[in-house]
Length: 204
Length: 252
Image (spheres, rainbow over the protein chains, first blue to last red):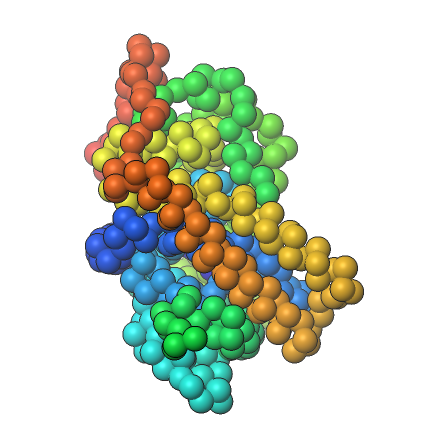
């Protein structure tokens, strides 16, 4: 889900850059020096995870995992995604420099939203509740990203309306897939490493 | 995992001061991204191709890269010619393509590729770590640079970790398909990757504390502007300025 260079109109590019700058500033303020290695290593892990090809019918898709990233990193999702996308832009030329702001916001804003909406509740003791919410978290993060992407295109020009609508629809299978993967992944993490989700061990 | 694909080489652009390259790439991208006059865009394409020639990169590899990058643009070609209002050019069943629509997508395609080619020639020819140092000297917040360095450093480590986990799955006869078992296994794989990263980060943090880390990050590479850097910088700025005047000052 990267918008290429040269597509978006100047006002959309400026708005994206400004919102991302604010988000990154907030993320950096919340991330003290002690936490930098953790955020960086997890950023690298998410980068690697997003390269995994997940089979879907006759083709395969890449996961975005911004919902999970938001749960694990909170506001640090902004600098993490900015660095991830900057690396993709420089190493693989996906995305670009002028679209860095808009592309980062499209992925990071839903991540932070998920952190606030689901951060506490996915660690619920009740497994059914936790799994359902984790699915909703993974699903809605991609849904919000797709909607933001569509909004960027439509604000650029009315003629993008059809393309934007198809883009959102095309992401529907990915949304279900992300929901499933995030639900399974969170169940795993709660068993193996609840600290990752900010849960401290009870005595023993 | 291959990073720094285009960074090996010994052309003029490979040796240029990275700060110069970053600033030139920024100005060029911004001008081209907002430009729409044909003359300005033609100049942009010429400039990008000239950079590519100076960088002496493998044309084949650059073309392969462009093919991958243009996926989004191909997608737009499917829609915009038919949804952009204007003079009718031809019809495909119920769909009508307009002249203006095709010009608009063509313009987007040119802009996008001009920028990508320039980015390959300017930024792709610099090792990513060197770019990090240069960004640090250009006053990008140090925490962000710090984050970039660590991420690049551990990207390859974690990719190896991933390969190891994946090999373990293959040995146990895991074959991916469209089923719940695959999705659960891949989710656990991602979970395991995160757990390993979390533990590794903790070890790194402790190792850094042992070595007296107190939040200061020292930039070890320093750059000196030489005559050739200044000359190239001026040339590129003049070209970019010329493009801007083609766009906004000189009348059609």
